[in-house]
Structure formats: structure tokens, C-alpha cells
Amino acid sequence: MKKKNNTEYTFDYTSIPLGFYDEVAKKKKGMRSFWHHLKFQRIKDYIETTKATSIIDYGCFCGTFLGSTDNSQLKEQYGLDILQDQIDYAQKVYATDYRKFMLIDEFKRDYPHKNVDVITIIEVIEHLEISQIQEILQFATERIKPGGKFILTTPNYASMWPLLEFVLNKVSDVNYEEQHITRFRYGNIEKRLRGMDQAFSDNFTTEFVTSSHFFTPYVAQLSFSLADKMSKFSPHQKWRFPLGNLLMICFSKKPG
Image 1 (cartoon, rainbow, N blue to C red):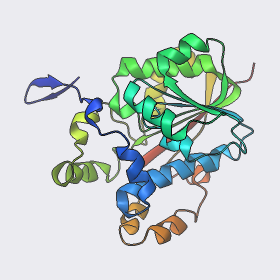
Image 2: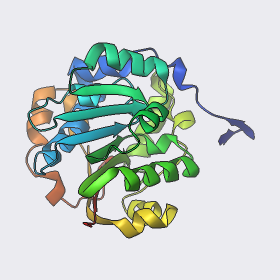
Image 3: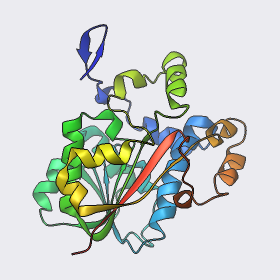
């Protein structure tokens, strides 16, 4: 729960129109569209360096990330969420013979022994309470194969993001003050996640922590293609930069 004027509330995610963020991402124009494009591309670029062939996108919402991939590497794909209407949308728009979308509880029931090479959780944990994040870490520990990857992104509150969030709350139809209830910074994300679940901490090593979306989203407001070119100057997993607006952390599950 988050408080405003001493009143507790949680955001109603069913109020977000079906396909809203999908349309934003596909537009390929402006800052908000580039934000989604870049975070998806960063994750896909990294996965390409691994031997992963199976993936779960946890908190997939309307399925845009998996919908931007193919099966040239990721032969087995699952998108999971808690919102039935978003799952229905994703299943209608993006499902294939190698890509399925379903409720999280449905996956746990129907695939009790299914483990995968990669789990992604893309801008989800900031919307969750600590107990819910702990459930995800437990799920990752149980469902990622030895040597597999857990890739997570979330806004960086040690950057310009708080100012961006304030501006967006004032001028757009998005209110992140209500949505973002657990906030992370470049300097504390690894320690905080490890402190939430001992089994997760024991079973995973940290491959890298970095950040992106420093100034390219602003460039995208003028030129999407230029911003895209600029974002490729340095491989993100080798660029330990603390001030980007979006954090990206990758954990690797220990073998055996």
C-alpha cells in the first residue's frame, strides 16, 4: 500500500486500456516509445550472448516484449501475468506455437516441473510490495535452470527519473506516484534483492548491474533513429554507469 494524504490506496491496473502500452511501444516515435524500445533491445542483446532457448517473461502485461522476439534462439516462450484481460489480449495478438500467455497461477498448475533458461521481469517490481517481490525471487529460484539468467529492470531513483516521474504525473495521463511503491537505486538494488530472500541470494551470482536511458530518450523526442544509433555506442553489460534512468541487473544461477 502507498499513502497519500494519510489515505491508503493501490493502483487499479485494470483501468489501463487494453493494448495501451503495446501501441506506445509500436509507435517508434517520441520519448515514451523509445523508452520501451530501448529496454527491450538491451535485454534481447544480452540474451543473444547466452545459450538460452527458453524464457518466461514474468509480469508480461499485454505481451509486447515477447512479441518483439522470434524463435530463432528462444524456441520456448511463456508470458505470465495476473490480469486476465491483458493475457487474453497477448494471446490474441502475439501467441504462436512456440509462445504462450497465461495467468501465473495457471502456469504453476499446468507446468509444475517446467524450468527455463531465462526469466525476465521488466519494470514490474516497482509496482509491488516486498512480499510480492519475494514471491518472484522464490519463483526464479525454483524455475531457472542451473546456469540460467534472471534479468530485471526497474527505474533508477538515483538518477533524473524522479524528476521525469514528477513531470509525467503533471502533464500526462500516467500517474506513477500511485503505481511505483517500491523504489530502487543503482547503489542498493543488488543488496536489497538479496536481502529479501536467502535462498535466492544463495543460489545466484550477480553478473552485472548497469543503467541505461540516460539521455537517449530525450534525443528520441527529436529523432528516434538517431537515439537508437546513439544507444548502441557501448555494450550495456560492459558499461557500469550509475546515472541512467533505468536499472538493469542480471543474476546467474549457480550450477548444480
